[in-house]
Length: 123
Image (cartoon, rainbow, N blue to C red; front, side):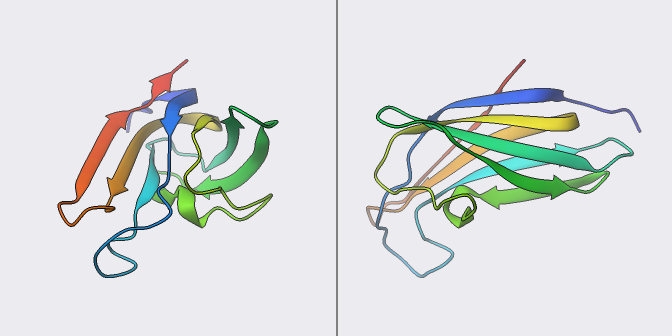
């Protein structure tokens, strides 16, 4: 299979609401980084988060096996520290092999839920 993607991706817009409506965990307001690794090698991926009022935090380290996908909820990141709610952030994603990255948000603050998705910027 052909390897698709880039090694560096940027999500310039991030925000996780502190509350939501509907059953948990399915309808918890969240952001997800969807990663596709089509290569024959496992991807060592690092995320660094940037904020408007403090130094960057990271790296958050994850693995995506060869020819697999991983949908990572940003809400679930714990190490080096949990991601704060109700706070603007941006994310730089760096991988050991080319990957494809998509960003998705479920905003369930209202009963009429909204989902937003976009491809990240690649370099």
